[in-house]
Image (cartoon, rainbow, N blue to C red; front, top):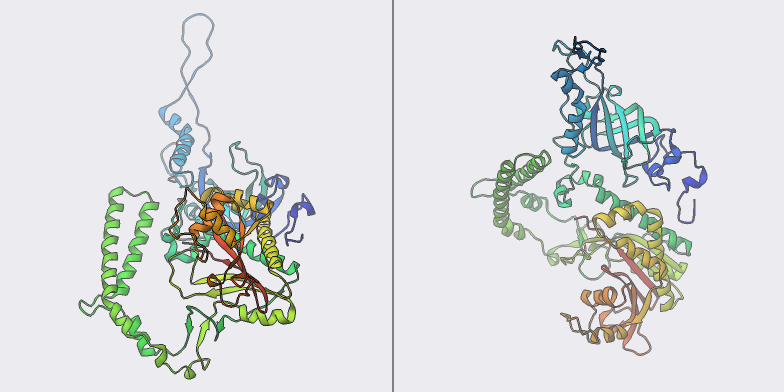
Length: 577
């Protein structure tokens, strides 16, 4: 294991396949994310598990070849010609059946199951044994963005082939790794299964995922399935890697981890209140959404909206005719409009049940006083830094500020640090090295996920991360930034750049995307645009604060020198929608 906490399986033994901890199976990442694509493990026996992302079946050639019908040679003199075989129409169709199946498979997208043809003998009677198939699965176990092809003989399963091939089916298989016979195969290796150790079936009509790329908002009603989408899976692995990298960097540089409370009695700004004083009668009245005029329950209407949405998704996945889809969409719109009307009628009732804080006796509350969800762990960290020197915390922060932006969510996870006996330049050095460490860690440990994100989300993200990791981060003061913005002749800003004005997103975007084309650190802001606790510089006009700004993102790290020490914090926000 290296300093990043990464185990180098290839270095340990190139021919030994490491098992997943606390399991006898091998993670797909171990096989597929090697430099050789897993070729060094060919002919090795492994156990793998995962869920089916796509599948196809090929029917076994079990019927014996039919005898050819020969045409008698001509009776004319001369040397006798060799007999020429002649085939009946039925024989020709039987011999070409595999071609028809493959054509059907290609036209259907490569993952749908074509009809299972029943075997018949020459007299037209149905064969006594069921048809047998070779099933090709593409499975994923969540450890990697890549999938492994698993080849299974249908006789190994006690589950019907149609159930076994359904998307979402979970399988655990034991077999031998082989090199694919097809030259056009996507992967270097595939698993030839000899045993099916487990099969967990799903109901295809209720499973919301399909081979088609679905918008994430369509899965809001199926949040427990969202991690199985490739996008959410990749984002989750990247987020996990960044979390580990954050702890690794700070621990390696002498910071002590501190847990701060989530529920607090102190704070500033818009905060979420925590209370147990809401009356049960008022709570029940708020939850009782019934239209008194016509007796229609809004809960019933919302349930109908969900059901009709699922119906539309099912029609789209099953390639139903366009008229049926259009009719279902029209019906859904009418139901959604009705739900909106009922909600509008009941808003006045909901507002009437609100309790004003000044009328509440918080001495009877759970904590005996007013309590909130924390917006920052700064006050706790300051006291710990005064005793331990360098400390940090990593946890959720809550802001009750309704800003329509992906950069400001109600719940965000922040990395917050406090450093005693340091100067502003020390904090900027630490922030720059911290951010570059995260970039390098991501490139080294989540390379395949970054390739997928570059393909599906942002085509240049990997290039930008590589550039950041390999170059120094430029620093300049707020006054210099204003001077550069004022010299812009090809750009008009909504907020005029003048000294004393807070830098907006358009200002920061112009500096990082167009002028410097990379990350920058801006420091020494006017005291009016930074928090009151930030220490004044010697000029009495600016304060010892800085922002690390990233192209196409904005501010990711903010730092300041306070009366009690230096602090900087990094915000991690993930918006899956």
